[in-house]
Length: 256
Image (cartoon, rainbow, N blue to C red):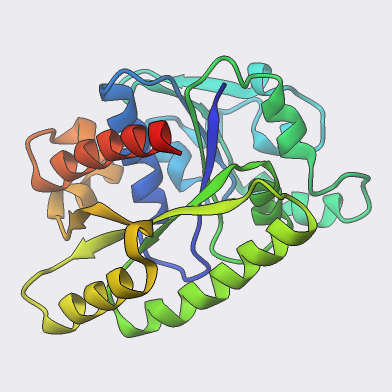
């Protein structure tokens, strides 16, 4: 039975997509069956997995409108080692179209239930805003992985996200919880980042993953080659950190 996780943070530019594709590639490397669902109309997780969003015949848009199943819409990201349900600009229109539909926040959950036995992990890359798309992700997930930079404004954004998760947990999805916080783009030379990191650990305790993802040029370069950093340069510090994170994730899920 698949563990379904949203990679979410209401603050933009914190590395959600980088986290999604590299965690997926890392999990694949340690022998897990993985599906990535791209819920962002920009389609960055799709392109970053080596799938051309412009050539997709079926996307997550078709899944949400129930015109296609996950089985029909998924594509194999061969080099990355996992499956992708891609997204493109068309998805932006789903926001408006979903408003008047029944079960509008449960459609992804229903679709994923049909393939729950095909995967060990389903990772959902959410857009930065709290939209109907993000809500579909949160309603279908068992938990949320929150990538965050150790900066002052990131703490503010985190409290907003935690409140959102509490509301969804109370009203729509009682299974939803925060799985953990992942410190990304970390530079140990910056005092403020170390201070914020300590604050996170003192406030959230074991909800903070032990693995820290360093600021890494190779991870930043990888998307332009249509690959996760874990595949693009396996020897880079960023890639190695994500493989360690994948192992920690598998271990943590075993303990949950």
